[in-house]
Image (tube, rainbow, N blue to C red; front, side, top):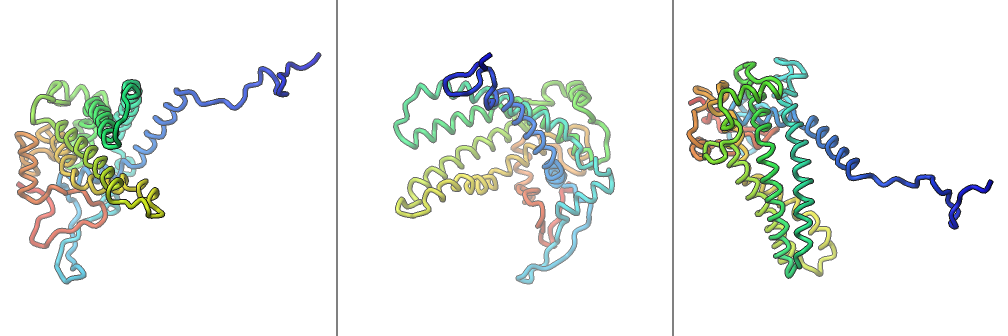
Length: 318
């Protein structure tokens, strides 16, 4: 019996190179996101403890190359070793599970919203490149805001789990126990307080919106007016402009992220958010003003080279 072949000589019924389905792609993205979240969690854990002003290791006195005396604070590796010494290696991953859930929800929300946005965007004709940048940034802003609202409760859980290291509390454990504990003590306000300036959600959203608009518009104007078309490497320079602008703008918007993390811990019953370690803030603006007055608006922005003048105190002791 002749084998069922088509005119091209290929056997009918034999599956050719399978194209990945959207579900396969989404699953791969979710797994990749969870892996990256787990790998980078110790970095964010140390950063959070520095943000709340916890300095368990003594600084060392040194001098800069200009002869100025400074206090060198412990960097990431020293801090991580201290955490391992106190809690073991598993201690470096305190608060990881809410972050993984947050990453998963963020990926799903971004994917769904992006699909809807692309459907509407195809109906518009682009007139200028600036209009294109404004439209795309507006879409990114909508996606980012919806993602932040959906994931903020899990961000609060993760931050509070990590902040327990300061006072050695055991108040917040797994995800479900965190949900029950926060809802029982603070209600929905513990997660959001969306309509109140006391919320850590507000500075998070404001910081991310400013980051998107500043980064995209600066990259557009630099690529349009600063990069010469006659330059042989113009296309290569343009491809990296947005990345470089992202690094620069992230430094300027960092205080919003710091305030958001501090407000997630503020007055929640943990030592990290109560006097004498930290004042009780009436709003995120109150927190911002306090940090600005103390000169701590960029506390935690550096992991490895941390130093302060000898006359300054490395942590808040109000």
